[in-house]
Every structure is written in C-alpha cells, then in structure tokens.
Amino acid sequence: MIEPQKLVDYATAATTDVFSTMLGMELEAQASSLDPDFPTINDGVMALVGLAGSWTGAGVICCTAAFACKLCNQFIGTAVENVDEDVLDAVGEVANMIIGNLKTSIEEHVGALGLSVPTVIYGRNFTSRSIGQNSWTVVPFHCGGEVLEVRVCLAPAKEPTAPRAGYSHTSTVLA
Image 1 (cartoon, rainbow, N blue to C red):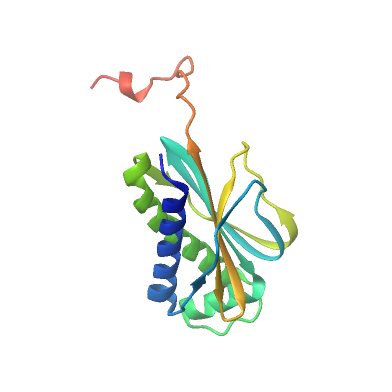
Image 2: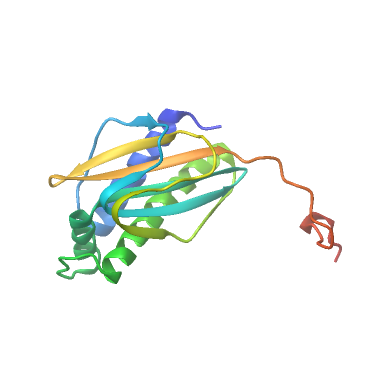
C-alpha cells in the first residue's frame, strides 16, 4: 500500500526532474487533490500510460495544445506552432518518462509494476474513462502561464483468474 501523500511526492519529484533535466523547464507544483472524475480535455493533449502488477492503474498527463507545442519545441529543438506528429510523440515520451520515474519510486511500496506504451490523444471536449471507480490523485503544475496536470489512479489488482482450458499457466509449465 502507498500513502496518498507519498504518491503526490513521487509524482511531483518525477515531473519536476523530467522537466528540469530533459526540457530545461522549471515547474511550480500546485496543491494536489483527489478527483473521482475521469480526466477531461476541453482543447489539448492527453497522454496515458498504464501500470500493471500487484497493483494496476494509469498515469496521465494533460495540457493545452499550446503547451504541448512548447514541450515539443524544448524536447526536440524545433519551432512547432500546431499540434502534429512530432508534438504527439514528444508528449508521449514526456509522459513515459514521468510515469516511468513514478513507477520506479512506488514499486518499493506496491511491488514490481509493468509500464504500457503511451497512448496520446489530441482534440476538443473529450473525457477518458477507465473501468472501475477509483479516484485520481491530481498534481497540477504551473509553467510560464500554462498548466500541466499529472493524474495517477492506482488500486490493488484483483486476484488472478484460473487459466482457461487449453492454456498452460506459466507456474505449471515444466522444463
């Protein structure tokens, strides 16, 4: 089990480290909160990275389209003004680094975790949805008049199910 404040501390450290090291940008963490609602975007970019192991969940970063372009410009040294493939790739990679660093920190509390490939979504007026009713830990950051939001939802995994007929479970396979 991981204490909620530890999750906030780890998310803050992971995000500020990635921004200062990889992007040369300073962030100012804002007050965290718990949100029972799913991440929503009015006009911007959302990158989701799944977590799986003895605990399961996801990490999400959300920002405006303008801030996503700024991230891309800092990350790959270009002058992008509109969201394109480079911007989506850069936001996905930033999310991967943040959630990957967060994963490493929380593993001492919840055991080994796997990380999915990032999924990046760009658009207007959409909501993501995960199965289950767990609250999201929300850690917002300010940077040059923009807001970046890091959200994490984590819960104990359900008991493993019995293998289906015709499939060998890895623990029963003999060499």
